[in-house]
Length: 51
Image (tube, rainbow, N blue to C red; front, side):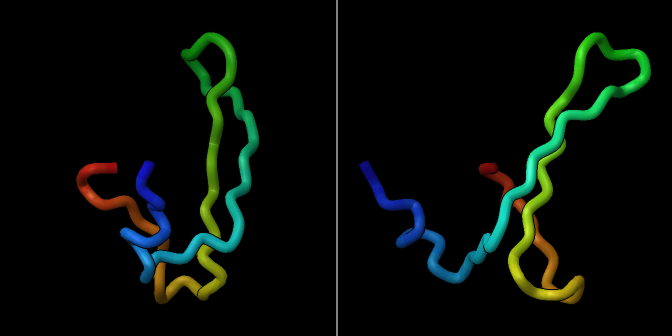
C-alpha cells in the first residue's frame, strides 16, 4: 500500500471535523466534513480533480 502522505507532502490537514446535518428535501442526514489546514483563509483547503 502506498503512503499517501508521501505523495502529497505539501498538503496539510491539521483537523477534520465531522457533523451530521439535516437537509430539507432529503431523508436522513448527511455528513458535513470541515477540513482545517491550520492556516488562515488565504490558503484554503481544496480537493484536486481525482478527489
